[in-house]
Length: 110
Length: 118
Image (cartoon, rainbow over all chains, first blue to last red; front, side, top):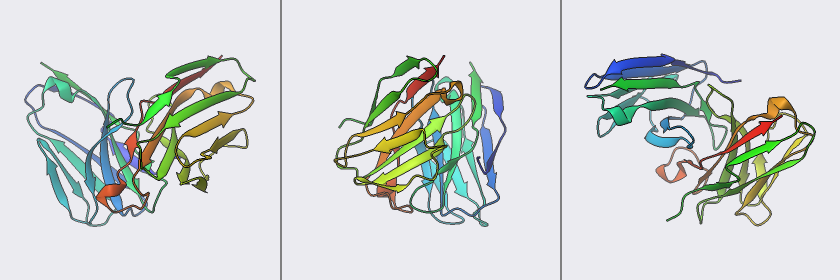
């Protein structure tokens, strides 16, 4: 089963608001990743983090690799309607076996 | 260039039948992964290929599931004697080298095959 605890499960926000979601794990990971999945599509990589403490931005998205290597968060600033979708965190320990959280379903109301 | 493609996009079968799901990875990617995604869940790892060989098949749920990649490119996931619990979206991903911790190793996902077992 999955080892990652992702929260919240779902979020309903107004356009323009900021969003924050996070993942925690009982295991240490070498890499943390954040993906977005639209209906009928595969997950698309948003941000990849490779070092403990690393803070990385991609446009309005910011993610951090926790110091303990057991957690990560993703922030989305000034949300827009196209941010709607399911966001997954994923942790990778070695060369394979990437483990995913259960996802955060984001709804943005115009 | 073309991304990861998967066929068919949808497959409906009856309990007990055999199915094959195909994945065409990004050209030049040596690593290929199969995942299974149940409704409301994140993808779960099934198997990882490095070239033609299965480097890690620890995620395959039982011996009804088998995957091949005979020429190190296209892969086929095979499910024998399908059960209703096998219904899920089967995702394929590929990466350049399969070595974690480097940007070149990002996994790129296909759109998935939605398998429904009646």
